[in-house]
Length: 283
Image (cartoon, rainbow, N blue to C red; front, side, top):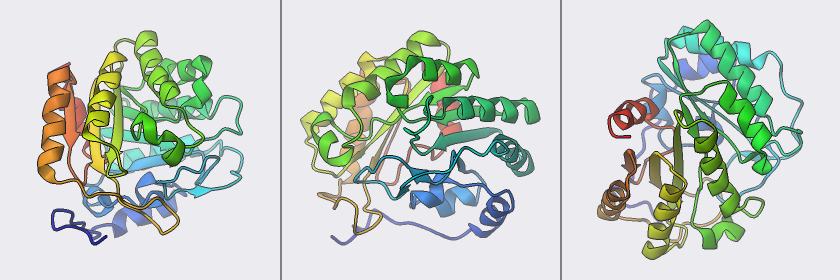
């Protein structure tokens, strides 16, 4: 389907950010996932650092990140991330990763090391982590939370019915449980999640998903339009109109979310600092 007029992207303003990432041998989820907002975010500059390599052990139908056998974690990567954060002068940083089912702790220790190293180099920086589900391991989750990120984010991605199609190696209940457990283990750390629309979900299913996320005490929420990154990925079933996104936002706020970003080009890490600051006033 042709893109509707309300979905516009700008890929300008990327070169200086790309050069820094290449020099530090770092990866961003902005590029690997082919985010439509990378021109906007890179020009600020902001970026979501993707640690633990660029090959994912899972193969979700919507995702552009490469699937395959990953390399061993790079022990120097946390320091390179910290130096990039310092050189960019960031006040808020997002750290995410591919899923690493090949590692005993799912990469949780590497997340913790990166958080601690960034904090040591830049003590005032706020840190959001966007993690995989660690196969439901509470011990792995505890490692990440013990490093004290300011926001713990785990994306639910889609409604329960579409999990087998979109996330065959994941589990809807397990994703809810990791958000619930994170809040139980560290009540002062803000929790966040996000999902896509346009994969064939119904409006009632979206409402059910919103209620499920609030039941597990999710604080912040992002909702965006699914855009097919490559022909091998799932096709877009529907382009959702802006007024529907607004109705989702209002419904979510009425359920008690502290901050909701809902729109066609909203993505999980976009304007993360603004969401954090705005959400603190409401949660």
